[in-house]
Image 1 (tube, rainbow, N blue to C red):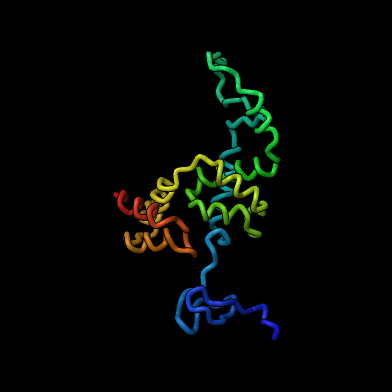
Image 2: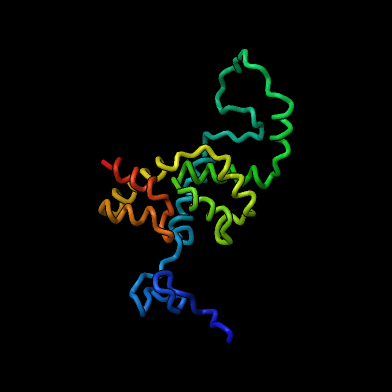
Length: 191
């Protein structure tokens, strides 16, 4: 039996509903798009991207460039070993790009580890390979508890949500996808 392409399963009860239905007729659960499919998320990303490359920002392809005009100070630290340099140069370009994109999302959108991975591999997002996305997740210097707190503060300030509702949104598979511990840290540290 062929399934109608306009039907999906309800994420709450599993019953069939129309893709464009606002809620499930069986259980009443809302049928929401993931946040990264909403227009306002992309508007923010574009706005931040334009701001990051706007006037006064110099772009350079030199990875050693630090962005300031001060002279380089020599340190007594030994040079990197040849093995480390070989390992860095052996990393595929796609992996490096995925890591760079992950760092941008981490700095601007304060995403969870799972949310960030999903965004990197999503056909509606960045479309990186699973291996490249996993490399980015394994190598990003992110503080997931801090990200959960920033996201919680955003919900509190812009949507006036209760701590309980914020916690639910932070851990939801259809929301932010933070761990229970990360979400609890955020709730415990809200002002």
